[in-house]
Image (cartoon, rainbow, N blue to C red; front, side, top):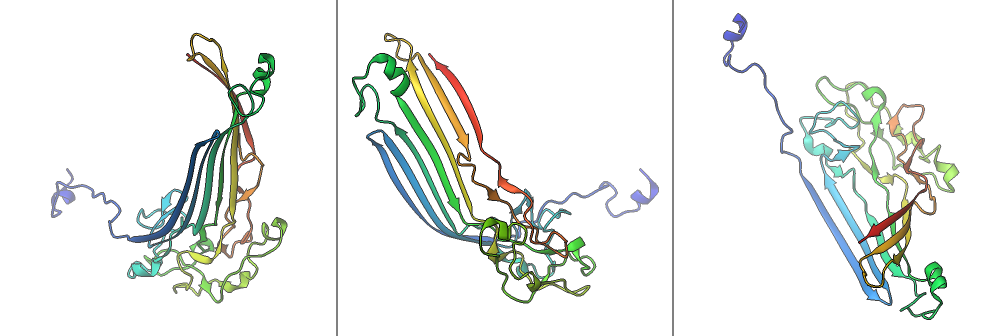
Length: 283
C-alpha cells in the first residue's frame, strides 16, 4: 500500500461505489374496463380499455433512467440538482388511452360445426377446421422531452439545459406527409436559454406527444388429425403475421432544440409486416 493511502482516514478502503438513491417518487391513476366473451359458437374475445395518467420525477427512457442512474445519455437530468421537485412531470411512458382487443375464433365450416358439417372428407381437409386469432392495439402517444443541442451551457455541476418554452407547442395537422418532416406546427415556441440559466420547459411535455399507435397481429391455423385411434396425434399448420396490415407506426420526432433535424421523424417504431409459416406435429 502506498504511503499517501496509509495517511488517509480509512486506508483500508481504496474506492467507493454508490447505487441510485431511493428518492424518486411516482403516482399512477387509471380507469380500466374489461369485456370477456368466452367459447360462444367458437368465439373467445377479450377487450380492454385503459384511461390513465402517470406522474413521476424520474422514469425510464430508451432503457435508461432519466437521472437516478447518472448516465451521460439523453435526459441526463435533473436540470437543478438542488430542486429535484422541478423534475416532476408526466412519466416518459405515460399513455392516456389504450384499447386492446384479443380474440380467437373457430370458423364455422367443417365437421361438427354450424356450416357444411357433412362435407366430403377431401373437402374437409381443405376448408374445414380453420381458426383465426388476432391482437388489435390502439394507444395514445408518449409525452415528449426536449433538450438543447450539445446539452446547452448549464451551470457547473448541473445537468444539461432544457429549452425555454414561450408558448403551448402544437403538432402539425393533416396527412402523414405534413408532419413526418415537420412535426411541430410552431417550433419557434422552443428557445435556447441563455448560458448558465435554467430552461422553463418541463421534463416531459404532454401538450404534444409522439404519434398515435395502431398495430394488428393476426394468425390463421388448422389442425389435421392423423389417426382415428390416437387423438393426440395431430399436425398443425399455422400462419402468423405481425403488423398484418403493414400500417406504419412512426417513431418520436427529434426533440433537440437547435438540431437541424428538430421536428423530423426518421424512423418507425414498428417494423414492416412480417409473416411466419410453421408446421407442428403433436403426439
